[in-house]
Length: 254
Image 1: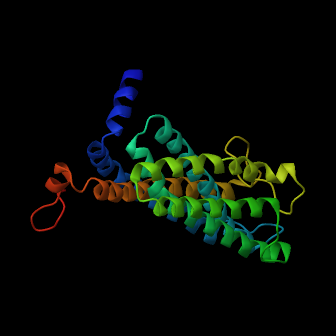
Image 2 (image 1 turned 90 degrees about the vertical axis):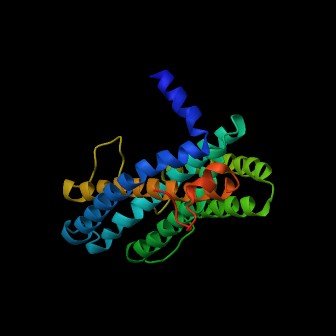
Image 3 (image 1 turned 30 degrees about the horizontal axis):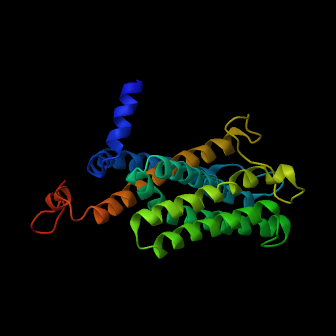
């Protein structure tokens, strides 16, 4: 098993091998992710029971919680890739960070926006400088900073190192987001859904929520691989295998 993982790790360092293996996983991620996400969203928005306190306004949870959860997870993935970039200097790790940073920024914005929409009927205001909201806003700025720094440095290796350092500095914000409702007196409620604890909601609510979370992770996987493929082709455009990948007519080989 260890030998297999070692071989897989070394192969992953090859842009050409990564491009090929990504093609195998992407259709599965896309189809299964769409089925799970659409099923969960339709179930949650149309068929889940009303909340006894918040009525129908709580249904935005089926968008808010998955996007907030994934926005933080994406940053942790970037931090892991940043360590690989700095220690082992694997190109694919830097490609991953550059490819998913905009995705993480969009997810964070959606989490903040849906949280504001949910907060209006619940708290009576669109925004408050609550510890959880403020730390999520900082996460959005961190994503913007990663994107801007990567674009500002023309040298590929220098950009990779600088971005990796920034990502690792910013990762301290993730535990602040997670434990903000426990460390400070905030309006934001504790975690609605925890994988390590028994759900406090009835199954008619948490099952569709879980489906959306799983579906969104798979859709992120598809999108990340697609964006990484695009970045790999751009970086390797002068290599023989990329030139061979493109047919004379301009189309790509299957």
